[in-house]
Amino acid sequence: MSDSSSASSSERLPVGPQAEGYPDDAPSHSEGMPPRHVRSDEEADAGEPAPLHKGGLLTLVATPIGNLGDLSPRAVQAMRSADLVLCEDTRVTARLFIEHNISTHAEPLHEHNERQRVPGLIDRLLAGQQIALVSDAGMPLLSDPGYRLVRAAIDADITITAVPGPNAALTGLVLSGLPPHPFLFVGFAPPRSTARKESFATLHAAERAGLKATLIWHEAPHRLAEMLNDLGEIFGEDRPAVVARELTKRFEEAKRGTLSTLASFYAETAARGEITVLIGPFEKTGQDADTLDKQLETALASQSVKDAAALVAKANGLPKKTVYARALELMAMRQKNTD
Image (cartoon, rainbow, N blue to C red; front, top):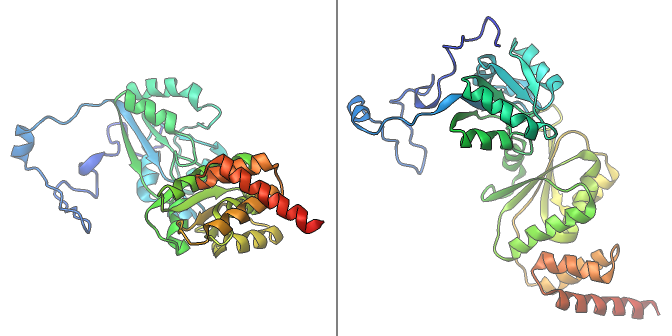
């Protein structure tokens, strides 16, 4: 339960337009959008009744991605007034609790136990409890646990709200200098190179079919150089890219360049901290044949002709037989040059 300084069970955080700071008659007309129509008391009484929700409240709370000062007052109050705070690692969340005098009971919810814990958590919500879900850093669910719980809460008609806040993908995007919209947040790439290149090839095939967006990933420091090499192999070494790291911290950095230059840099320089990788939108050029050959040459350096052709064909949306034939031609040319 929450500490003595928090609200009692009858003083929980309000949800929706009546929440503090969001009066029912407040204007809401963002640029390019019409103002929200606010119903009068008479209209509200005569109109459809408000939807009924069962049980308690599930609140998704964003936490800092590096700078503890980014935790909002509303996030603090949501955790204080909850009956339970679910977190990835209780040791990490304990820092926030100490900093903000939060004494709510906390329990772990992570990828290894979420499936088993969801039924019991839904029972607690249906019984009227209020639960706050946080991740170690950033917004819950985005590359973090919580989706199964949210989906189950929706199916059980439990009220869900969110306290927005820090997000590494969006922070990296606005700092990158790359086109901000549309963008596609992919999450973490697969840890192994073969699976990683397969996932990149699928995205590049979508680009050749019409997708034009800035692409965003998270990556671990020890895999960064290898990931950048794989990105260059599939998307092209000259693709504009940004490596953003230590966001909101003292040594925040957004290093810009091509995939080739960034791969070379991080092959020689160890990366530290939480990392976000972004590449600019796909631009079609008149050098598709040369690009295809470069991709094949790179793939052939580490794979069989069959595997290299399959990978490049998938990335470019081309028939495997066509690319395989070109791969054989390149192999023959290489052999001829060595004779």
